[in-house]
Image 1: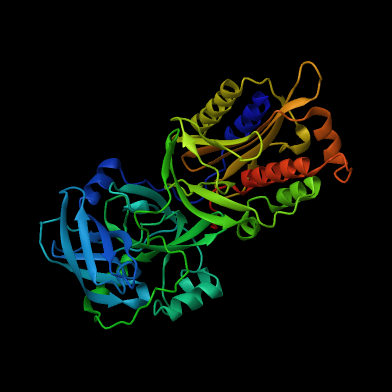
Image 2 (image 1 turned 30 degrees about the vertical axis):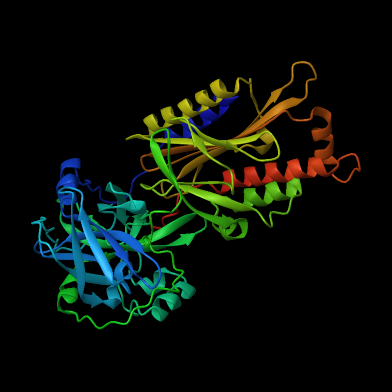
Length: 478
């Protein structure tokens, strides 16, 4: 079964997308660790009935911390925690720069935390950067790969009009606000995170992003705004209470669970309807083909989104499935029928080793199911598909025949995808298929012998299949 999928993916990965332009080195592990000593986890409470968390950093000297203004706006109690020293201090907003969504805070108890130094030169297009912060509000920092994109750096031109209007109503940003358009993914909790270059110098501040289907887009505030922040006043009137723009911040401790699936820790970040996800799928044509072939209306389909914090890869599963992890696979079952969905992932430094991860994923499916699968070319990609921004995927269907009846007894569909250094595999398995009935009813859905039970099975399988096509990595436009 899975050999065909392996070799097709291998053929694509053996011919990596050609790199263009200048190649940039990324910050080393030692550089990132040194910068993390200046990192501060921001917790803001009494914020008009809610609390928020984000990231921040010590700037210029140990008495001052910078974060994103929307993390602390309207909050009366703000604290900062440093992982290096395990110490906490109370913070107070002293300066607000609304046009760049930045806040400067004074430190109540000076613990001598080291300050980050700022890069004076402009970030080059395609320069490799790292954002360091407390994604998802956890107590352990992590870094996120970023790269500066080309294109107009004016925020108003980079986001939809509706989102811009909300920012204006909240009292944030100006027509001329400039940003670093980021190839990468700032997850919730990374607002205010320092963004550094290969020398460990501060080049920007993680600010936000917008949902774009299951995945999202992000932006960074240039560090050049800090000089204006230092002389800004503290009388801004910012109200983020009704702001529905999905900043890369504003999380609290009760947000969705995290779960280890192979080499990636995924976060259940949100639940969204099919209608909000489908327009931004990486292959909307295939989604339309599935709906037409199976004859199921997706109205009412909702999906839980499990997200990888580093590159923003997302897995879309039918909402409400209870996912459990065994260390490698994370899986759960649909309520009504024998339909199981599972996913796993890992990181590798090059495409050849990423391909090895895809082979491992397939081998684990074979071992876990015990079936001998055969490829179903009618519903499979002919080859791996490259989107042009480093994202590569292949999607394949397989069936296992009952040795006695000769009819399918199990059906498997999988999405194998990679971007950057990450691989994610997602698979759905339908078992104990009613042999003749299922095949007949698929072609004769209005036959009275194909009753409500078949229609419910078909609906559940369609929802699961569509989730595999909604699972993707965020698109980054160069």
